[in-house]
Length: 216
Image 1 (cartoon, helix red, strand yellow):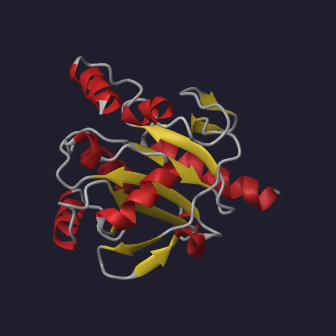
Image 2: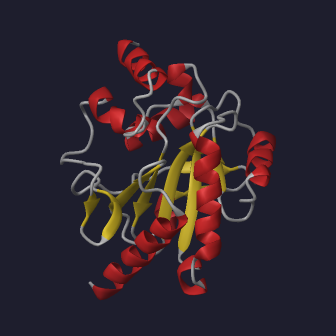
């Protein structure tokens, strides 16, 4: 709880350039091996993820009702973020930017890209609230919202090393970034609100991930 209180306190005094997602390195010492930074890395415009990290497998239910496994999305670039339908700060921005990004992609890239939002507040995120949230951001059909119970979501949060809103007690305080996984499931880039998360950067990193895998 002290670590959660520290995260809340830092945000309260305006220490937000690194976003809550940057705090989870300190929060979870058992995270993936390797260094991460908020500087651009190589061909990507997002920050450098932990070296050698891959997408964990999970099975979650779409707000539309179908179960989908992460492993079943291999061959596509997968954009993963963590949202709370009651959040009024970063979540609406992330959803809007992802919707715009998908809309701006060339058709060839759009067919090979999936954008997923994973709930960080299963007590309040429901199919109805998810649909309403996405509709308000004009992202229906572009961003999928994945839901489950607390018991089913906690292992997913742990595998992604995220801080969930239910752990802070505040829908506006949780890990809030966009992670780019290439078609092989390798985590290649992380984009942050107010730092490098823009539609053009998302499109650039998706196209880079596709190009690098095709060239390998």
